[in-house]
Amino acid sequence: NKIGVIFDLDGVIVDTAKYHFLAWKDLADHLGFEFTEAHNELLKGVSRVRSLEILLDIGNIELSEEKKQEYLVSKNDHYLEYIYKMGPEEILPGANELLNTLDALGIPYVLGSASKNAPLILKQVGLFNRFAGIVDGNSVSKAKPDPEVFLIGAQKLHLLPEQCVVFEDAIAGVEAANRAHMISVGIGDAKTLHEADFNFNSLTEIPDNFIEILMRKTAE
Ligand code: G6P
Ligand code: MG
Image 1 (cartoon, helix red, strand yellow):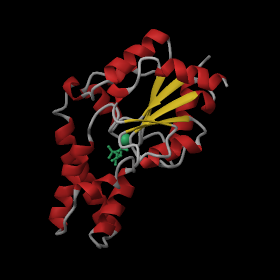
Image 2: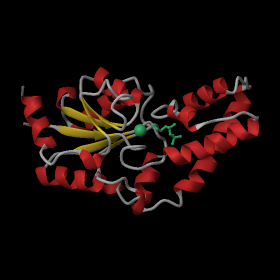
Image 3: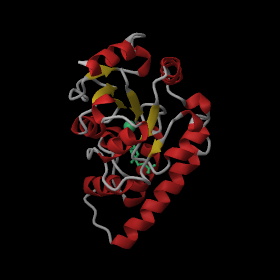
Image 4: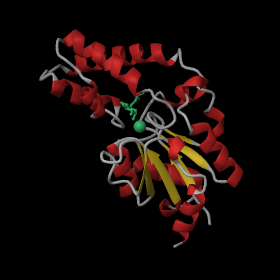
Protein backbone atom coordinates (compact mmCIF):
# COMPACT_ATOMS: atom_id res chain seq x y z
CA ASN A 1 0.00 0.00 0.00
CA LYS A 2 1.18 3.47 -0.90
CA ILE A 3 2.09 5.80 1.90
CA GLY A 4 4.27 8.88 2.23
CA VAL A 5 5.75 10.76 5.15
CA ILE A 6 5.76 14.44 6.03
CA PHE A 7 8.34 15.59 8.57
CA ASP A 8 8.21 18.68 10.72
CA LEU A 9 11.74 20.10 11.03
CA ASP A 10 12.30 21.96 14.31
CA GLY A 11 12.09 19.49 17.19
CA VAL A 12 11.79 16.41 14.98
CA ILE A 13 14.82 16.42 12.66
CA VAL A 14 16.89 19.04 14.53
CA ASP A 15 16.65 20.75 17.91
CA THR A 16 16.52 24.38 16.88
CA ALA A 17 14.00 25.22 19.64
CA LYS A 18 16.94 26.03 21.91
CA TYR A 19 18.22 28.65 19.42
CA HIS A 20 14.76 30.17 18.95
CA PHE A 21 14.58 30.37 22.76
CA LEU A 22 17.92 32.16 23.09
CA ALA A 23 17.03 34.66 20.39
CA TRP A 24 13.52 35.38 21.75
CA LYS A 25 14.87 35.60 25.31
CA ASP A 26 17.39 38.18 24.19
CA LEU A 27 14.55 40.30 22.80
CA ALA A 28 12.52 39.90 26.02
CA ASP A 29 15.59 40.95 28.04
CA HIS A 30 15.90 44.00 25.82
CA LEU A 31 12.22 44.83 26.38
CA GLY A 32 12.61 44.28 30.12
CA PHE A 33 10.62 41.17 31.02
CA GLU A 34 11.27 37.53 31.81
CA PHE A 35 10.87 34.86 29.15
CA THR A 36 11.11 31.25 30.37
CA GLU A 37 11.50 27.83 28.72
CA ALA A 38 7.84 27.20 29.60
CA HIS A 39 6.89 30.33 27.66
CA ASN A 40 8.96 29.01 24.77
CA GLU A 41 6.73 25.90 24.55
CA LEU A 42 3.95 28.19 23.34
CA LEU A 43 6.05 29.25 20.35
CA LYS A 44 6.77 25.76 19.04
CA GLY A 45 5.36 25.16 15.58
CA VAL A 46 4.05 28.73 15.50
CA SER A 47 5.03 31.19 12.74
CA ARG A 48 7.60 33.91 13.37
CA VAL A 49 5.04 36.73 13.30
CA ARG A 50 2.66 34.90 15.63
CA SER A 51 5.58 34.06 17.95
CA LEU A 52 6.34 37.76 18.38
CA GLU A 53 2.68 38.47 19.18
CA ILE A 54 2.66 35.76 21.85
CA LEU A 55 5.94 37.06 23.29
CA LEU A 56 4.61 40.62 23.48
CA ASP A 57 1.45 39.34 25.18
CA ILE A 58 3.59 37.62 27.81
CA GLY A 59 5.45 40.89 28.45
CA ASN A 60 2.22 42.89 28.27
CA ILE A 61 3.81 45.14 25.69
CA GLU A 62 2.27 46.96 22.76
CA LEU A 63 4.41 48.05 19.83
CA SER A 64 3.94 49.90 16.56
CA GLU A 65 3.95 47.84 13.34
CA GLU A 66 7.29 49.43 12.50
CA LYS A 67 8.90 48.36 15.76
CA LYS A 68 7.48 44.86 15.35
CA GLN A 69 9.03 44.56 11.90
CA GLU A 70 12.35 45.78 13.28
CA TYR A 71 12.32 43.16 16.07
CA LEU A 72 11.31 40.36 13.70
CA VAL A 73 14.39 41.13 11.63
CA SER A 74 16.77 41.46 14.58
CA LYS A 75 15.46 38.28 16.22
CA ASN A 76 15.98 36.34 13.00
CA ASP A 77 19.47 37.79 12.47
CA HIS A 78 20.38 36.67 15.97
CA TYR A 79 18.83 33.20 15.40
CA LEU A 80 20.77 32.82 12.14
CA GLU A 81 24.07 33.32 13.98
CA TYR A 82 23.34 30.00 15.71
CA ILE A 83 22.08 28.32 12.53
CA TYR A 84 25.25 29.14 10.60
CA LYS A 85 27.21 27.21 13.25
CA MET A 86 25.08 24.07 12.84
CA GLY A 87 26.39 20.88 11.27
CA PRO A 88 25.30 17.26 10.70
CA GLU A 89 26.07 16.43 14.37
CA GLU A 90 22.93 18.36 15.30
CA ILE A 91 20.60 15.96 13.51
CA LEU A 92 18.46 14.46 16.30
CA PRO A 93 19.06 10.81 17.27
CA GLY A 94 17.06 8.37 15.17
CA ALA A 95 16.38 10.77 12.29
CA ASN A 96 19.01 9.41 9.89
CA GLU A 97 18.01 5.85 10.76
CA LEU A 98 14.34 6.58 10.04
CA LEU A 99 15.17 8.20 6.69
CA ASN A 100 17.31 5.16 5.82
CA THR A 101 14.40 2.84 6.66
CA LEU A 102 12.04 4.87 4.46
CA ASP A 103 14.57 4.81 1.60
CA ALA A 104 14.91 1.04 1.93
CA LEU A 105 11.12 0.61 1.80
CA GLY A 106 10.81 3.04 -1.13
CA ILE A 107 8.55 5.36 0.85
CA PRO A 108 8.81 9.02 -0.24
CA TYR A 109 9.08 11.85 2.27
CA VAL A 110 8.84 15.62 2.23
CA LEU A 111 9.32 18.41 4.74
CA GLY A 112 6.38 20.33 6.21
CA SER A 113 7.71 23.16 8.36
CA ALA A 114 6.51 26.60 9.48
CA SER A 115 10.06 27.93 9.28
CA LYS A 116 11.23 30.29 6.57
CA ASN A 117 14.74 29.13 7.44
CA ALA A 118 14.00 25.45 6.74
CA PRO A 119 16.00 25.14 3.47
CA LEU A 120 19.04 26.78 5.09
CA ILE A 121 18.84 24.53 8.16
CA LEU A 122 18.57 21.40 6.00
CA LYS A 123 21.62 22.52 4.03
CA GLN A 124 23.56 23.18 7.23
CA VAL A 125 22.96 19.62 8.47
CA GLY A 126 23.44 18.06 5.03
CA LEU A 127 19.87 16.77 4.56
CA PHE A 128 18.60 19.20 1.90
CA ASN A 129 18.84 16.77 -1.00
CA ARG A 130 17.27 13.83 0.81
CA PHE A 131 13.71 15.16 0.76
CA ALA A 132 11.46 14.66 -2.26
CA GLY A 133 10.07 18.14 -1.63
CA ILE A 134 10.11 20.98 0.84
CA VAL A 135 7.10 22.90 2.11
CA ASP A 136 8.19 25.69 4.44
CA GLY A 137 7.14 29.04 5.88
CA ASN A 138 7.79 30.69 2.52
CA SER A 139 5.26 28.57 0.66
CA VAL A 140 2.24 28.64 2.97
CA SER A 141 -0.20 31.43 3.75
CA LYS A 142 -1.91 29.84 6.76
CA ALA A 143 0.18 28.70 9.70
CA LYS A 144 -0.28 25.48 11.71
CA PRO A 145 -2.74 24.44 13.20
CA ASP A 146 -4.17 25.16 9.75
CA PRO A 147 -3.61 22.00 7.66
CA GLU A 148 -2.38 23.92 4.58
CA VAL A 149 1.32 23.07 4.99
CA PHE A 150 0.60 19.33 5.14
CA LEU A 151 -1.99 19.37 2.33
CA ILE A 152 0.62 20.94 0.04
CA GLY A 153 3.01 18.25 1.28
CA ALA A 154 0.53 15.55 0.20
CA GLN A 155 0.38 17.12 -3.27
CA LYS A 156 4.18 17.00 -3.49
CA LEU A 157 4.01 13.32 -2.55
CA HIS A 158 1.27 12.75 -5.15
CA LEU A 159 -0.75 11.06 -2.42
CA LEU A 160 -4.11 11.52 -0.75
CA PRO A 161 -4.08 13.05 2.76
CA GLU A 162 -5.23 9.68 4.16
CA GLN A 163 -2.04 8.10 2.78
CA CYS A 164 0.25 10.57 4.58
CA VAL A 165 1.97 10.13 7.93
CA VAL A 166 3.07 13.27 9.80
CA PHE A 167 5.85 13.39 12.41
CA GLU A 168 5.37 16.38 14.72
CA ASP A 169 6.64 17.69 18.08
CA ALA A 170 4.22 20.61 18.44
CA ILE A 171 0.60 20.70 19.60
CA ALA A 172 -0.25 23.02 16.70
CA GLY A 173 1.42 20.58 14.29
CA VAL A 174 -0.45 17.51 15.54
CA GLU A 175 -3.70 19.47 15.26
CA ALA A 176 -2.82 20.49 11.69
CA ALA A 177 -2.11 16.85 10.74
CA ASN A 178 -5.38 15.67 12.28
CA ARG A 179 -7.32 18.42 10.53
CA ALA A 180 -5.70 17.30 7.25
CA HIS A 181 -7.02 13.74 7.93
CA MET A 182 -3.49 12.35 8.03
CA ILE A 183 -1.95 9.88 10.46
CA SER A 184 -0.29 11.95 13.20
CA VAL A 185 2.77 10.75 15.11
CA GLY A 186 3.69 12.87 18.13
CA ILE A 187 7.38 13.05 18.98
CA GLY A 188 7.84 14.23 22.56
CA ASP A 189 5.74 14.24 25.71
CA ALA A 190 2.72 11.99 25.17
CA LYS A 191 0.55 14.03 27.55
CA THR A 192 1.26 17.25 25.69
CA LEU A 193 0.73 15.57 22.32
CA HIS A 194 -2.20 13.36 23.37
CA GLU A 195 -4.18 14.26 20.25
CA ALA A 196 -1.71 12.34 18.09
CA ASP A 197 -2.62 8.89 16.71
CA PHE A 198 0.75 7.54 17.92
CA ASN A 199 3.27 8.84 20.48
CA PHE A 200 6.99 8.36 20.94
CA ASN A 201 9.36 10.23 23.23
CA SER A 202 11.93 10.46 20.46
CA LEU A 203 12.57 9.04 17.00
CA THR A 204 14.88 6.42 18.56
CA GLU A 205 11.86 4.79 20.24
CA ILE A 206 10.07 4.01 17.00
CA PRO A 207 9.93 0.20 16.54
CA ASP A 208 11.53 -1.27 13.41
CA ASN A 209 8.20 -2.52 12.06
CA PHE A 210 6.32 0.74 12.73
CA ILE A 211 6.29 1.84 9.09
CA GLU A 212 4.94 -1.53 7.98
CA ILE A 213 2.21 -1.24 10.62
CA LEU A 214 1.27 2.16 9.18
CA MET A 215 1.15 0.73 5.66
CA ARG A 216 -1.36 -1.82 6.90
CA LYS A 217 -3.33 0.85 8.76
CA THR A 218 -3.77 2.97 5.62
CA ALA A 219 -5.03 -0.14 3.82
CA GLU A 220 -7.93 -0.54 6.29
C1 G6P B 1 9.00 26.30 13.54
C2 G6P B 1 9.37 26.47 14.99
C3 G6P B 1 8.81 27.76 15.54
C4 G6P B 1 9.22 28.93 14.65
C5 G6P B 1 8.71 28.71 13.24
C6 G6P B 1 9.11 29.83 12.29
O1 G6P B 1 7.67 25.94 13.47
O2 G6P B 1 8.89 25.40 15.77
O3 G6P B 1 9.29 27.95 16.85
O4 G6P B 1 8.71 30.15 15.15
O5 G6P B 1 9.23 27.48 12.76
O6 G6P B 1 10.50 29.77 12.11
P1 G6P B 1 11.37 30.85 11.34
O7 G6P B 1 12.69 30.15 11.15
O8 G6P B 1 10.69 31.17 10.06
O9 G6P B 1 11.46 32.05 12.23
MG1 MG C 1 8.39 21.41 15.44
